[in-house]
Amino acid sequence: MQTDPQILPTIQDLQQAACLASYYLAKEPDVFAAIWADVVGRGADWRKRAIAGQEALLKLAPELKVPSLWP
Image 1: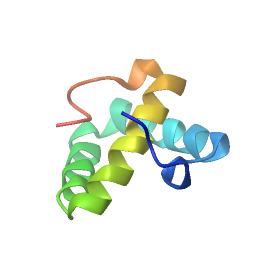
Image 2: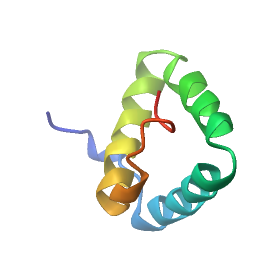
Image 3: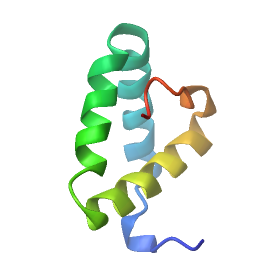
Image 4: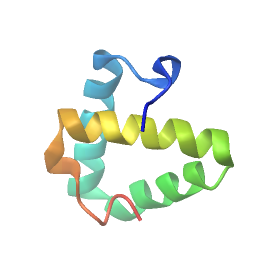
C-alpha cells in the first residue's frame, strides 16, 4: 500500500510523538489508548492519516508497538 506523501509526518514530528507515546506507555497507557481510539473513530480521513503516522512512528520507535497503546 502506497501512502500519500502529504500525510507523512516529518522526522521531528515523529520524534516528538515517540517521546509522548513513551511517556504514556510508562505512566498512562489507558489515556493514550482512549485518545487513539477517538482519533481513528473520527472518520476515514482521520483514520488514514493516523495509521500513516502510526506506521511511520513504529518504524522509528518499534519499542512502542505495544497492544495496550493501539486498541
